Length: 213
Image 1: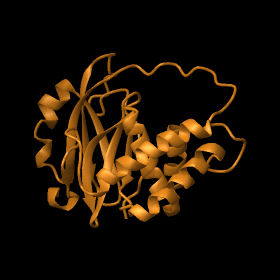
Image 2: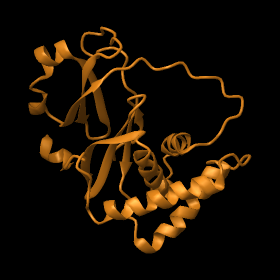
Image 3: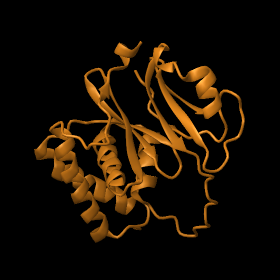
């Protein structure tokens, strides 16, 4: 069984350990190691000398090039507000199968906001998995497609709205219900396109990890 987690972007080359400079080009490689996915962030020099033929390595799934940006300092926030992003991170950490549909809807919401971008699609045990990269931090999120049925979308909408308003563990209401509901409705409509197999021009074609081994 694959372990799902958030894989953060490295701040230095994972081959030569040289720190990345701001605006430096680097390469990300994704490997399937049966029980988990491994991410490697590699500088241009190590890519050329060691990893340019990585597609032939056992377990290779995908690779792409990105630009490293120094993460900004987080401003102090005296009031902790639940957002689609913070909620998605919490639900991924909890890894509750009952929240699979909610995680998928939240990822689509963030994709529509251009905060997440699809970098790869995998097929694991006949289930489609989207590998999202956070545009700002470079974190990777692996989001399985729950194959939502149209008659279940409204129920999931209500669940996501409740989670955004009260949090993964109900506390004080924080998010604007009206604004959040609009975003959920738009994201739910987007899932209909994903459910019927359509994809945007930027979305990679699915990769079957076993075929790459």
